[in-house]
Image (cartoon, rainbow, N blue to C red; front, top):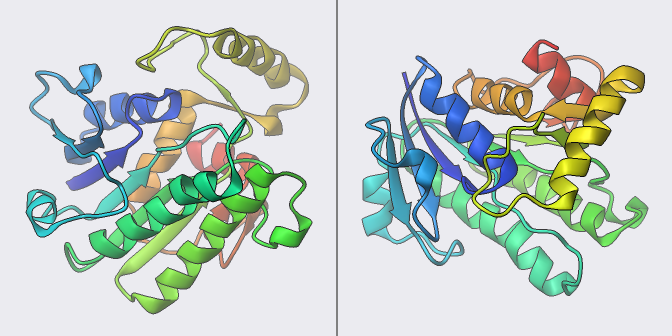
Length: 240
């Protein structure tokens, strides 16, 4: 069974991943790195919450608590709306790179699964928006790091419309955007399935990659040496 590190557990995607991992018999433990307590992990023997304030650094004391982990699901993220490019890049690129480099020292192998987003482009000159440019940079830098560190296996997932299907697990008030995601997701499931992913299916794909063998993924909708998955590829991996 696998010991998984998880970030972003209070957000919509991260909370769904935590819920799925807690119920998975293939996962023995989830170490949740969070700036604050995580309600979904409270009183669950499979989870431990480590309050961590600075995701740019991982001191030895913290790494000792994570010893034995073989995977990380990086679900931490923030909207680019209203942010400067430098601030958005710090959170979106620098943080996961620092984590991947540090976590690769924890054992023989480390599967690092990062939630990116539809519209990301590793060729920054072709990205339509800052979001896609910076997300694509994060993907590219992680793939470069994988070539540098033999024990590191990277995956980037690009979900489009994430549909909570009415189950709001994020630790914040339900927003109009949340409700729109459910409504738009239901419509898209009928007319354009390849553009929507239910949160539980995204969670399954993330956990399956995290506990897997680290090999590239084959099939349509996959790029970046078999390690960057489109929304359609995520759906296929989740079996929907």
